[in-house]
Image 1 (cartoon, rainbow, N blue to C red):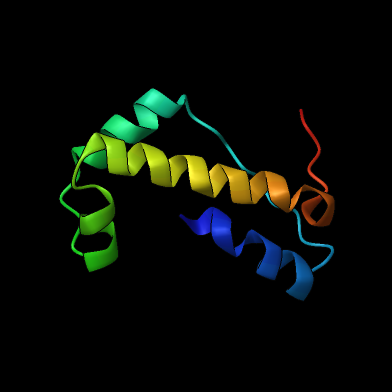
Image 2 (image 1 turned 180 degrees about the vertical axis):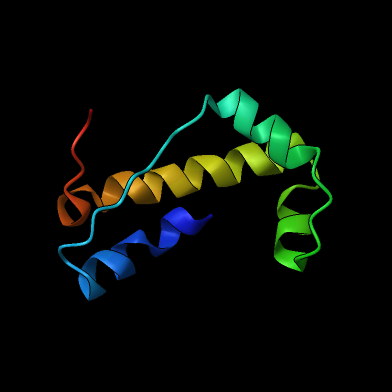
Length: 75
């Protein structure tokens, strides 16, 4: 979820180096689904795998929409 803050971080700290490690989506979704989050937003987001998968897709869609601002370098 912190990925949504990356455009703000890039604007505030244009020379900051950001490392984004991406796990396989199935692993990420299952891990989040099995957690007992206390934050109400995360509880709602992880209530079922379909809702969580849709949110994951939206977050990565947002990441790709911000590609020109973030200027990622793939290693």
